[in-house]
Length: 370
Ligand code: UDP
Image (cartoon, rainbow, N blue to C red; front, top):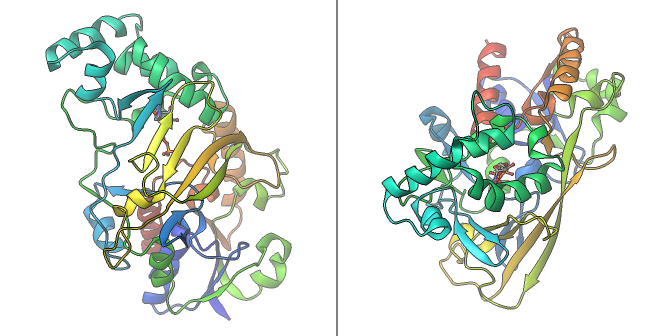
C-alpha cells in the first residue's frame, strides 16, 4: 500500500513525489508515456540534449524555487535571447532598443518611447484582448510584424479573440537588454531535464506505459490518496464537454553542419511560414558536450501549432472565457473527489511556467504532508 499514487511523472508530479518521500511517505508514480519528465523530457541525439516537447528554459524570481531545483541539477548560464524572423528581416526579442532601432531606425530611448506613445494612442481604455494589449504596449508596427502572425499561428485564433494576459509575458524595454525573461535566475540543467527529473524521483517506484484512467480502480486501490496531473476534463470522461488545448508537432532533424541558425530560438513571425519557430537545441548548452567538446552536428526542430483533438498530446490550455467557465465546472466536480488532488498544467488548466509548477507542487506538499 502506498500513501500517494501520483499520476504523471512530469515536473509537478516529480516535485510532489520528492516532497512526499522526504516526508517519509511511500509513493507510486505512474505515467502513460514510456519516459519520465513529462513535457520537459530531453533526449540525447548526436550528443545534444533535445527538448522533445518544445524548448524549456528555466527562469524564476523565486529564490526558494531556484534553490530547490538546484538540488537536482547544476544549471548553466543560458539566457534566452530569441530572434524574430519576419520575411527574412531579423529582429531582437523581447522588444528592446535593438528591436526599435531595426524597426524605426531610432537610436535613443526617448525617440523609441515617442513612437510607441504615438502608436499606442489608438487604444483608449483598458485593453480588452491580446491585440489591444499588444498595441498599447508597443504600438501597431511591432504588433503587425512581430506579434500578430506568430500569435495567430500559435493559438489558431484571431488576436482579438485571445486574452490580454498572454502577451504580458513579454517585457518591453527601452534598454539594450534582450533577455527574454524578467527573471533573477535562469538556466538549463546541465545533462538535461530528464536527468534532473530522474534525480527528483530517486527512490520512488515508477511505472511507465501505465494509463491511469484505463486502470483507475485497480490503481486507486493501491494508495490512500491520488495526485492527478493529467487533463482535468479527461479525468471526468469529458462529461461536460472537452476543454480546448493547443497541440504542437515537431519536425526534428539531425544536420551534418555545426551551426544552422546561430541561436537556440528563432521565431517566424509572419503568417505565411507554416511553423512558429525553429529550435536549434545545441545552443541551450553553448554547442558543447558535457566534457566541453564542440559538437560537429546540430539538431533542429521546426515547431507547428495545431488545434488539439481527443487523442492528441495537449500542450497549452486555451485560457479564454469560454474555456475558463467550463474549467470552473470541472473544478467543482474535482472538489467533490475527496481522495484526489488535481495539480499541474493539465490538472488545473493553466499556462504555467516551470517555476510556477514547482511552486504549486511545493505549496500542495505543505498543505498535504503534515
Ligand atoms: N509572442 C509574439 N511574438 C513572438 C514571441 C511571442 O507575439 O515572437 C507572443 C505571442 O502572443 C505568444 C506569447 O507571446 O502567444 C508567448 O509566446 P512564447 O513564445 O513566449 O510562449 P511559449 O510557448 O514559449 O510559452
